[in-house]
Length: 329
Ligand code: PYC
Image (cartoon, rainbow, N blue to C red; front, side, top):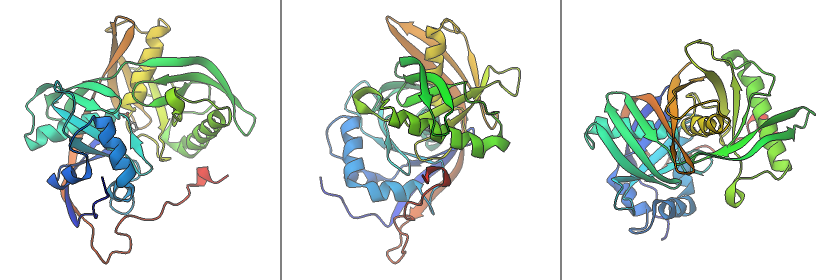
């Protein structure tokens, strides 16, 4: 399929899930961006191949927000699914995104496209069972969580050795408590620098996920600020932003590891706090050999808008990619 010309206007609904922004593109014009048939993964691949400038323009500067994840609802190939979801951020596509799935459910409810209840969502990572509980509340039963390496020691460029686990539940994570930093907003620059150092060390060591996937999310864990919760996290995302929410797929991967380690029983709640204090409640169930996580959170609509792409706007398709301080070698 050839890239169609960028539109001049598109309808979007914005929300935030415990502080982490989602933009759902709800414009019928999106149908032209995808092949009529095929799986959601194939549709995502076509969008990534043919529409990279549009992807960046939809969520990046100056139209989007730093940590924003975009979602385009698409027809699913799996007849059991009600919707498909193509997820993306400023730097690429995502196979799954927990906070954006919660944002999508609340957006679909807000638009009257769904009633409270459960529906199946085809994502590039697999089928996810989403429940809109009404209002701001939503949860999703994710694809299974899997740990592919335990107690991996990586040596950062400053010589610090950090030990953690490599795990997935839709995205790839390095999860560690062994980072030596407090998980608090005042430490964000240091947390970000440490997480980047870990990410680079993983790359240098040739550590990758299935099929050579980059381990492009780093979870730094620490004690919760609120004793009602179980842990607090800082999560570095592939676009260099930190997750303002406790990271839905990261929490899924974590509870899978905790269950495997005998630290979380099936059905037991795990209250995961973000660095900003927002909380996801997660649990796991066993399905044969698979560990299936569920994550519950809250999202709120922030805007129902039409984004515009003026023909004479020099930054119509967004600002050029600018190096982030942490990425400069
Ligand atoms: O909630 O899964 C998530 C997520 C991934 C990246 C940003 N949010």
